Image (cartoon, rainbow over all chains, first blue to last red; front, side):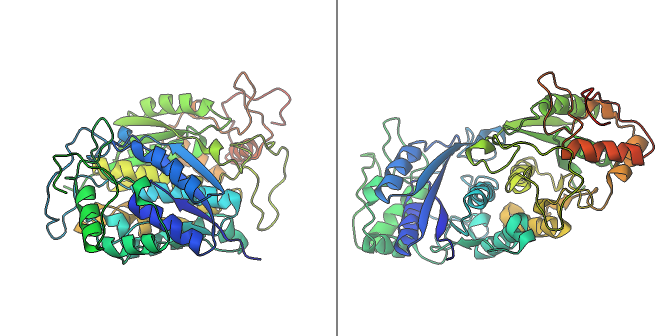
Length: 233
Length: 233
């Protein structure tokens, strides 16, 4: 029988949590993989643990990686996180883009998948509300899969090739939230903010909060997480 | 003027050191990148520092990454390192293969290259004496480059695409050593052993030592590093 093991990249945010719910619903056996990468939203790691528990992940690994050595992003350096933006200019990539982040994350997922003989990797990227990030596009995911199939034992031995699943890639934030609600995702466990308060409250003003809040509004429901009282919720 | 900055993956071994010498000789400005990844040959990191100095690398980053969380290789777990092997069976991948290692290494290199605006990455893989590793093959490197060009800002903004250079890919170990000698590489700084003694001596019996020793013999010269006296040098 073909393995239904799947490595699921789990940041603890809305998209990756919905992706885990989808993988579970499709009867994959999820192995959740979270990175602690010097990001400001370190709170996500704790949420990821609770989410992995809630979905009875077979295992949950949290890997510390330090992308601050490179800098180059508002999420890994002292650059300010942009607030109250109304969207990207055409072709604009915001300062919250972390260089090659998804490539690094998928590469660790590929390593783990090979060791546990999982033929599937799930990643919650989407190209609709994708904030202009190059590594959230369908053509990137397709090229990654082609490379991944050559990179590992299976590429030499001709055994099962790995498949990269990006089930949210063409979904709007509102569609994602509706899918998650249908799958009983508890969004109160998820956290998306790029720039939370010391006390762990979402700012309500960074790109991630604005996309999230607009998504809940468009889905006709209310975001269950608390925001700073000054946020434009 | 087009940037000549290049990220050079530098393990401190024979191949990566020769690759750094080639990059330098071709007038690239090398940014050397070394990983400390829980391998047994931790000595390589110290060597890498001395090698980066010797070639006046513009910068040298050493990044700790822990591939032991996955296991699955004699280099990252308690599996024994094979000794006195006479070669691979056709299609055999030895236990020293580290799952997705080059994919992870190249992904960090890609991140750094994007931050420092380097359009070039050098990696010292070769497919002749490649020990049967899937991620040392030309088709893998080509697929990685295709993916990398979609992964980063350049893939959206249409600016200079990254090029992955693997100048040793079709060279035998003896040819690599002759190239290095022509470029004044001091091979006494390099270290290749998978299974050194506590005191840091090369074992002379693992695949890496056997390939290295045969390479020096075929190049008509003598390996300048010391080996355990029991080694079959």
